[in-house]
Length: 226
Image (cartoon, rainbow, N blue to C red):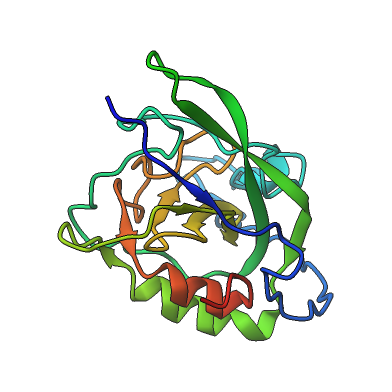
């Protein structure tokens, strides 16, 4: 096996053009309550009030940490830590972001392949940054435009950061991982803390690689300018 040659993109300083982050309030998680009272019909039975049903919040379950310290790993055909490289079979159907955060990940040496090639892991750099509420409509538009990757496209062999945009809808978290290099591949994860990007594990997400990463990065004001 011939080891692919990767050209590392410049470090974050001078290579990333982050938008000035407006520290918007993170907002309260939306909790959906089931009807508060259930009445049991019967002879002489008084109405019985059931306890409200509050759905679990993935953000609360994760200790209010939207992004993991390292990206989860899963199917990795290349053996170099990039994850699945198969194009998605269909477009995703993602709910609208109600609250979102941006996290940056950089590669680190996680080991070697059998023939001495590099295996990369991805570790978070810095803290999650909230996406201003005014940018959420543009993010939704970019997510709606995601489409299965073109098998015949040509991508550069450079290497750089990855970005994970984690958003909440009704307390449920979805992760959108975008390569800030090559073809700006997009991989989705229905559980940012446990499910590898590109694995299908919940309604709305799809497995495989999607096109449209540049628009996603532009919507939240991050990414390289080239």
